[in-house]
Image (cartoon, rainbow, N blue to C red; front, side, top):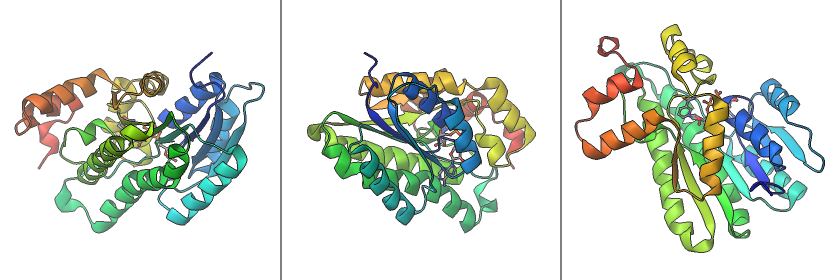
Length: 269
Ligand SMILES: NC(=O)c1ccc[n+]([C@@H]2O[C@H](COP(=O)([O-])OP(=O)(O)OC[C@H]3O[C@@H](n4cnc5c(N)ncnc54)[C@H](O)[C@@H]3O)[C@@H](O)[C@H]2O)c1
């Protein structure tokens, strides 16, 4: 029997990209799903792509993960519908503006941190008692390679994704003896809508679509890592490379990192 068969999985940001691919693959294994996204239309499209399998229940709701009250109410609804939760994947995320930090304003920081960090904290904190009550359950938080290395022109995003990593690793340490598996996911470049949704320039959008791993491959890798109870999942070969680089040269990885992530130094003032 497939690992996720008959389990109940929660996936945020399920209307596009990695979240959508996770949902389709989980459903394919016979997993019950509570899926959500802030974008109702895209979420409906994801629902239409879910393979129709007998006995698989799908609950789809619009949800803004940055809104604590909405998230609390959502969790009550999920528990009322399913009675338990086996896997929570806090996937929803956005990119920040592609500018150096002297050009940022507080609204940039707030927008990115509210979704990427608070969304993950809400999803972890609200489901935590239900995960602890269900031994063998999984909590999966999506960080980034920018939670491992800090490139220029991604200040708010890095702040959010390093924080997701720290928060998730702390949860893993605490939950180790309580039989909740905690996984932090560090995707490299994946060909999703994230750059276009943030209004980034054509060149960056093209980099994602031409150099990125497909969301389907990323999702397969993530689910395999979750199934194995891995502490972290590095999704692309670039992610492995950057992880090695920052371990070997924690204070001096900058010049080697830029070509790996595809930033030309002439983009920096
Ligand atoms: N694509 C990549 O190269 C890449 C790299 C590293 C990390 N990630 C991370 O992977 C995760 C998934 O991103 P993706 O690449 O699939 O992007 P995507 O834009 O294709 O999908 C993200 C989804 O999150 C939803 N979302 C945005 N704000 C939300 C909110 N406030 N509440 C609920 N849903 C919201 C969007 O509507 C969208 O459907 C994100 O956390 C992202 O930071 C992606």
